[in-house]
Length: 211
Ligand code: TMP
View 1: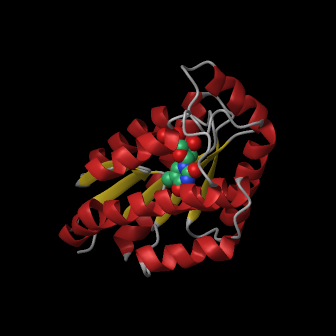
View 2: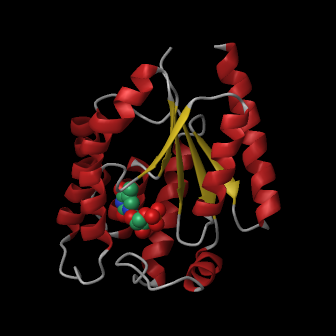
């Protein structure tokens, strides 16, 4: 049996890291053989590309360069890790994937969605996540949370308007594809966010077991 591909998305300060572990544990408790990975990154080469992308000293990076590096890392990630795992029947939980390119490079930077769709088709063919959990939070609340952390990376140095466009792009995609996307209200206290996640995961596991 082919494995399932689940992705987690969210804008700054949405609590992705704390909730990733919760999701991983919930799936493992259900007896699922799972690998956890992230983008950009997930392979040795991909992590080197990630360093280039996040390094705030690379302030001269062009928007197209940024987009192409995201997909270069993704291509490596897919062929080295994700596709072989799915083919073995393992599930893959990925911290961000192509929806982030639509949100950040499309919404945030203003690159046309059609152009991103061309790269998506080229690099992924027909592969899309089976489910995407979107941790949604008001931009100001998210930035306040994120600001409490260490040295900001190249993306975290962007201004508020950028993150408003990122959030809008995520929400627009989520509303256009409600069967794949589950929107989680991440503005609530952690315990309630995890209750929502638990509810969504229980539902989807039930549905998938029937098919
Ligand atoms: P992280 O904060 O989830 O570790 O991700 C690193 C940054 O990379 C985050 O600011 C979002 C950004 N990103 C994109 O801009 N496009 C993409 O396709 C991906 C996967 C991440």
